[in-house]
Structure formats: C-alpha cells, structure tokens
Image 1 (cartoon, one colour):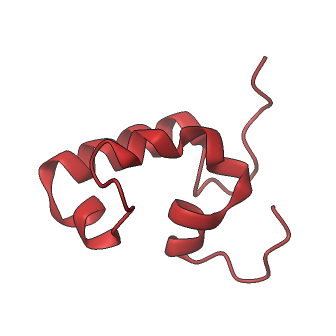
Image 2 (cartoon, one colour; image 1 turned 90 degrees about the vertical axis):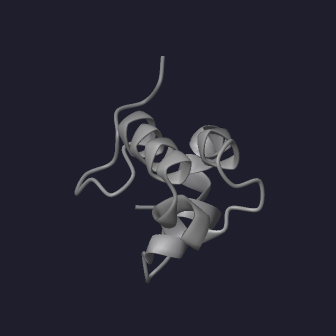
Length: 67
C-alpha cells in the first residue's frame, strides 16, 4: 500500500511510512527496533501485538483513516 514493491516484515515494522505513528509502541520494547527483540522476548511480542492491532499492519487492505 505504501508503494514499496517488497513488503517485508522488516519494512512493515521499521521502515513503512504508513506505520510511523504507531512505531513508538515497538520502541518501548526495543529502542532500536531490533527484530529479534520484537519477536523473541515477551515484552517484544506484546508490543508487536499492540502495534499490529493499532496500526493495521499486515492486513490485506489498508487501515481506515484515523479521525
């Protein structure tokens, strides 16, 4: 949806401009957004779940606009 031809996990979590406003949730678990911290620790997984819920990342269609 952002125009990047390859939507990798790292792109979605770290680079995608569509999810910038929700990235602070991930930084609470890993300040430098280290993927292994986000998927390999309890705190990281909880932050990742919150990020996915709030951002709509990994959906097949883009999330609705935030009012």
